[in-house]
Image (cartoon, rainbow, N blue to C red; front, side, top):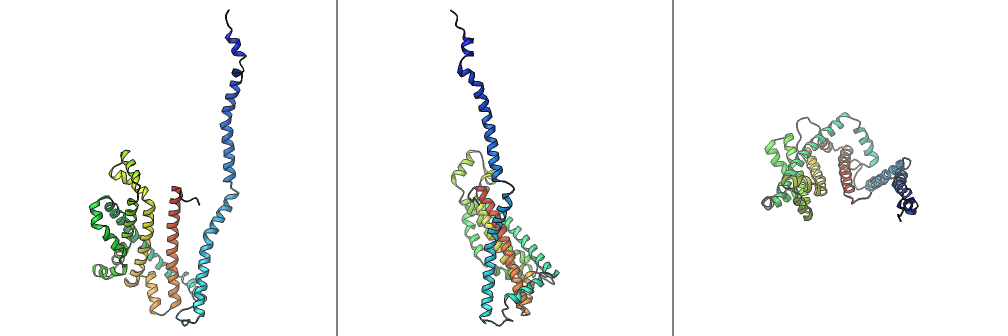
Length: 311
């Protein structure tokens, strides 16, 4: 007797439901994708984005605004105490109008332009030299033993101590100022890179060598990315040293009839014009804070990319 397999297969319940199961299985991923897309749209909706941006902006600004208010109040309290005569130490009410008048003059902005040009050029040269020296010293043990302590010593040396030598070498010129700015900033940049290389996990170095990374490729694709957080910290510290060196240089090295922030500050001191002098000091402070915020934003973006900061 011949068994009719075609008929059994036709009436097999598993066989009858297989096409429906296949269709349901095919529809499930598509439905899941639509639901996830809906959740993403709900979370990233356009209506909530401006509100979140406003909250983030407010959370970033109110501490700074509060700090400015406290500083102004403390300043005014010192004036009210009568510690110094008003012509020696004027209060905010006397200084801020002078500051407003200053920022509306062309001479003031020309001075800022010259100072910032010196700062950018000097810091750029310092970064190039610092990164090159840091890479060499961190790569070769002989150079580390020879120059490691010297770099740290240069970093701790007051920048103003370099100006007598700089003036002897370059006279009263732009080169004298840039020379001191570079010497003030380059050691911090180099030490930042050296520290980053030193704290690169050895397991990453072994993995890179297993993957065939050697020499320049090892630095480019592994060591430099791994040392980037420490390098950014070194750049930030290097900028602080460069800015301080530049202000000292502009107070000591006055070149012809050029006008910079340091020159304006020195002239206000010679004329006993304290309100103008404090106005220029406020500008120097504000520029330092703005640059620090830019470095902070770069560091925050780096931390978020590395997954160590969720904000």
